[in-house]
Image (tube, rainbow, N blue to C red; front, side, top):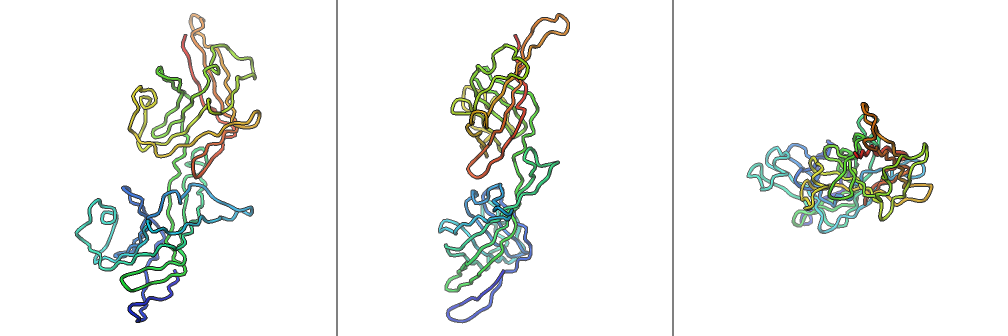
Length: 316
């Protein structure tokens, strides 16, 4: 960090924020980000959309930072306490009686916040995207802190590194479930769900010729949504005739509409199932595959060049 000067009623006074730790934490009950050094803390509260889970790179592979201007409704402050501070103090629903704040500086709106995001590539734990975490490096520029009539100005203040897990895993089995109350097909894994609502003509109980699947494009009628919840989800959530209020959806990714022969393609191959003893026809298995499907939300995207959605079995 680069300290310029502080002014208190016309007297020049040197003041410094002492933060060598670059690890940023977040409160579980709100969006506060904070950097702690014993009895000192820097707190930042800006909209979470400024921390997108994707890398913004230029043509040479260099990270392009997201730039955000601190708004009057945002919060950036420095606090010094009369004792060691931790998450139980900062994130409590009610202010703790100890330690107490003995000094507080609040940033003026207008500061520039640069957020550079880097992906942690991890083929073993990164799920379908191969990325396990994202690191958001936060730098604050041209910021003015005020305490009463005093001002503290920084040309550049390194807030630190905010690391988040990549929740996109796609750790599903190949078994596709269905509802008797609607036409939804879905796969579940703990807090994840992959949901499909498509034309039922794709699942006619007739065997398809080899290498000649039925096909359809993702569009306003044929929809696929990937959902992430704040708790484990089960089939009741999708099949109940009464809308469910829990668990809560924390992320939704939509499959983009397709282009004929290029992208957003659903393929279904159907095979007959026979009883192993009587050799009678007892059902069909519909094998569902997605080809060149792009999933997106309001801040990121990922592409599945070829993904086996799974087996949807129908008993006769």
